[in-house]
Image (cartoon, rainbow, N blue to C red; front, side, top):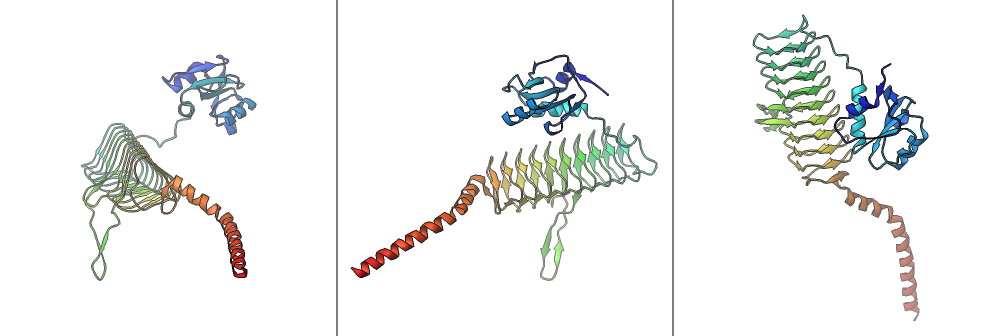
Length: 350
């Protein structure tokens, strides 16, 4: 079992300002969440409630905020952002992912005009079509289809049974999980009086650096231009991005999000599960959307939205508050009606 000392832990956190409070001779063997700690682990805690739980636990070390108390019962690593610091430690401790054996499998089909850079792996029954380019150290799992003229950067991982259609451009350090389809035709049809006429989509998809796309997600190609997924975006499993959309850098989408055609979403947008976006709308930078919201119109930057149709959450809170007050209002109306009836009777008898 590997043991990690204080200096190693500080190194894993990085160049952040770190204050160590407690025993500098400790050694830990694991990184665990506060709900599953063991005595020889390091964990993290933020806020009074978690500080209390930490003090009651038998854990050996913890990453905490700069403003935490010193007497929490273990060695403390005080940093400005404990969540990030703990992720760095846990990632550094994590075992290497057991990827498939490197090299070109005998059953892989690689076109003569394709370019596969040094250090790449192409798994069994994968297909790399004409004029495709794959950058250094990229890993192509079994059963992947890489279409004609596709360009994939370096250090990417394309998991089993992904389909990448023609002319798609994928940047560096991109991860695409199994079953995803990148560059399928957009859902475009024109009714001509007797049938739905298919609209040919001649654009492509551009996926920028350090994007991660979840299993069975789909990103459709643009009609004339590009569908763009900005750098650092993270799409969960079963997310659909329609034709001509542009998703800003570092946005995150949870499962079952559906984005209709020609939607523009800004940078750093966070979208909960099962949110739906109507077509041709614009969403500003830094917005957040509660799960199952239905977004039917443009949203300014920095808004937090909830509901169907989605509205700014403070408006929705007022609405809920008013609904909860209806019973009291009904009682008041009954009292007023009774008083009014009494006044009318008094007037009639006068």
